[in-house]
Image: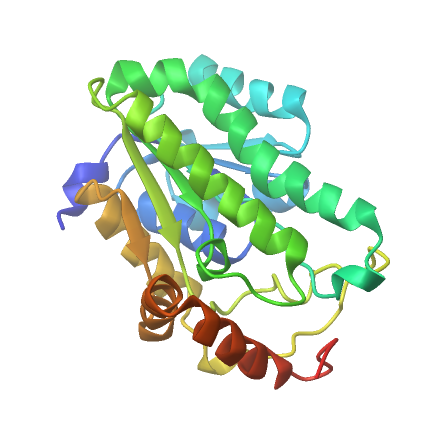
Length: 273
């Protein structure tokens, strides 16, 4: 992969205030891209902007709650107003959950669909004319849970499956237009996504059930994304466990269900045993 590929490209990253989003923004910035970072807290973005690029003219901070259609439209409008084009859209903003469906307040699933699915739909819809013009790339950051469901994550798996179906369809619709669509599925990644995951009543979980030090770093995930973008891959599944899980789900779905149940049940404070 040549970092020069990204030089001066205009790249939007949602959910850019932490985790994979921030790591990706920093990586693109180090390659000389013009990076638009979006998240709900503008003050946080402005604080992080110098770490994305030392050239302040190459970083645009936009406050955006991607569950709000008007925020997504404004994100695209602000980008084009500042840089005149869009080359890559990284739909990374997302929220997780952990609770049994039988115990779950339905508002939790609605929140996850609004952020994870509709946020991707809104941003992609408004960016699409510019991406078609540049023959650019749209990325959906999903999860292995978007290929093989995880118990205790009904809203999360549903939203990630939905994003995959949406983007696969967009790819086929524009197969003759030069649009690149990447469905990007990291495995377990060290981040605060599990700390912020919603519980049955919609409150934040507050702590992760996993040993974050043993997970793939957000920086490693960002580099994998950059390589997939450079190669214009349609799908990218990370980690050996993730690849084996997806393969097993396709070949032996009933067995995979049982193994997944046992694996997830081992988590600290699992909602089921």
